[in-house]
Length: 396
Image 1 (cartoon, rainbow, N blue to C red):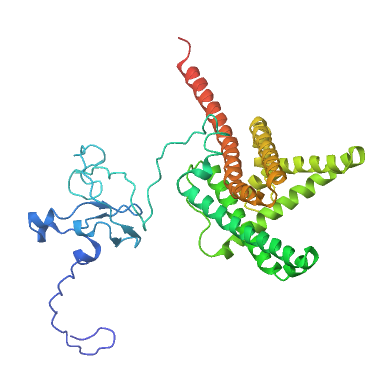
Image 2: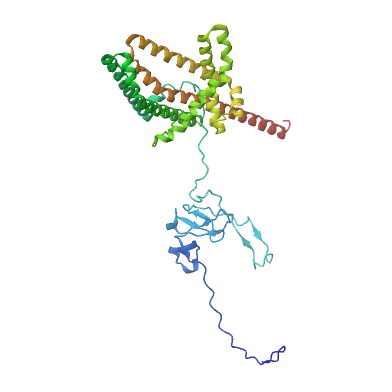
């Protein structure tokens, strides 16, 4: 044949046979079902799986349940859920007229089932019922909390270890006093100051970690504390710094208010007023620190607003804190006047129970003010819905 442009003679090759069209991806890779190549028994081993992202209709096998599957269209990973039994759907949901999309006939398509799917190992939304604050929230499960189940084991271990440690220190001090006299005993005890300081830091850090763990989880409405301070003691240092910072901050904020009482009534009255005001400021700072997730600037307008609206609950916690502190101080003082240094066998168990009881009380306060606010919102919402329904219904 002569090319009309360049006038060159060109030999036309014979046409090659068309290559066979490559089949789609294998069944095992994408889970696509080809019923024509399967027997009825083998086809029953596959079920419908609708991709929640692109709505592709895949057919994984029963052996792939619980494994990861990659959608061939959107390439999103999904964990294959168990098959669900679908009821026959009517064919009138979506229909196309003949020729509208060149389908050659009328097509009916049932809707895909709307279910929660496990994507990348995530779980469907929880449907647990809403927890309700106990009626006697300031008493129920508060003072008996250190003696419940595994909590009692922690309380008992803390009491025994701290009692033994302080008992050893007191016993060594008493022995040195008998052998060398009080001044020499004081000088010798300075050599043991470093172990005593380390022991005090260890005890303070664990007590602070327990206090924050109990307060945080109780404020969420949990009756059982799941995340106890465990493992490396260095993880307890941050809760210790946080609690001691909040104590210093509460004392610093209330000091200007307590100083005038010293001018008018003396130092003793000023100390009592300062402690009372500090006990009122400390719960607010702890809850604000948890709410705002800030340690150095524990300020949360939401907590202040909710405490202001639920001031009777805050007053109950405040009075109970004063009563517990006064009763514990009076008990320790009475035992000390009767038996002397063995008072440590009373002081240490009380100190070990403090983070459990006080943390539980602060957590219940946070739960109370949060649930009280939510209950008011739900009540207002129900009133609005009732008013809207009555207005829509019109006069009877």
